[in-house]
Image 1 (tube, rainbow, N blue to C red):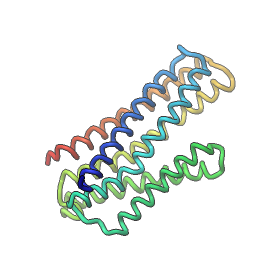
Image 2: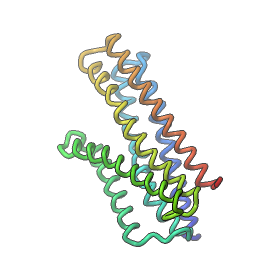
Image 3: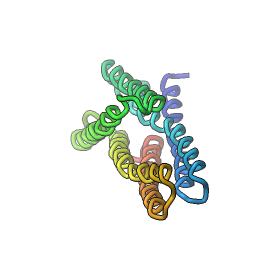
Amino acid sequence: MTSQLLWGYVHILLLVFWLGGDIGVFIAANIARTTKYSVDTRAALLSVAGIVDLFPRYCFALMLPSGLTLIDAAGLYAPPLWALLLAWSMGGAWVAMIWLSHKNPTAGFVKRFGRVQFWGQGIYGAGLAAVAATSYITHQPIAEPWLASKVLVLGAMCFVAMMLEVVSRPFGVAFGEIQAAGSTPDREARAHAAMGRTLAVVLVIYALLFVAAFIGKVKPF
């Protein structure tokens, strides 16, 4: 087995766990926004969805370092060792902080990590978009248009992930009120509408994942 095949397999697994986990979260969240079940049942569904959601988040954090390693193994480019070490260090730290935040949701560092992650995604996305745009114009640092396009799609995912966090916040507020003070038509309407907007943004992420997978496999241009 060559290193290219091995890292290609890893890259595919990340996509599978990202999309598969997200679909599970999508289904659970869609059920939880209805009044068909009790508040406790809906809360349990959301709790399970929060655990399942860890896997897409891990995959997002590891997609760039695994991608860099794959293009190195495939002989497309030879990223400097420092770039590979930096990418894997940042990806590993991101995964660790996601896990620690889940295990210790009330810890003081969780809010700080949330802010760093939110704005970090913006910087990350802008950097990827800049690399893609420069590559389209100058063919540097990426000469292949298909690979530059895949980098651009990953950058777009960063901004969509930021949007997802913003639009999902009102649901947390409304459902928290339902748990604390009981269900009312107004609270349920706000929770239902907020989750609807959240799921719409999730569908955009699915579309971008499909596009990225198509570009990476078919290399249409």
